[in-house]
Image 1 (cartoon, rainbow, N blue to C red):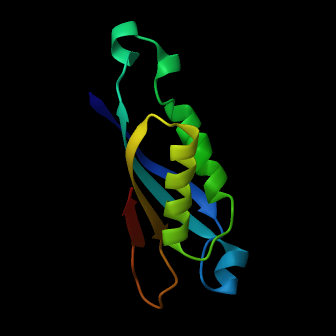
Image 2 (image 1 turned 120 degrees about the horizontal axis):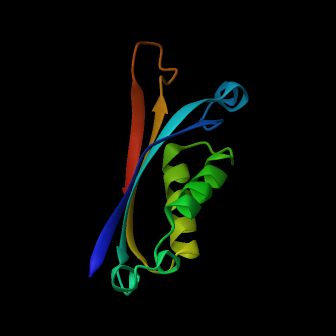
Length: 117
């Protein structure tokens, strides 16, 4: 049986962007994750060590966000790949990375990409 873990509204200051200035001054980013993983014995045993630990998930996301990358697509892809590598029980991940108040020359709340694998 699969179950779903949602991590919502994780915010980070990071230096992603296609322009050199973005990589120097940075911006605020928000990450949303939905993880589908095999339940296995987690619920029956009530054993957190058998679960995908969401503290570890958050730490993994924070590490990826700390590495400067040019595109949001690359950021999201790297988050998904690192999570699947660390937690083999993960079946599927949907990851949305949003750049808040991007420098597009007008008022815009955010721009985001979503990848699912």
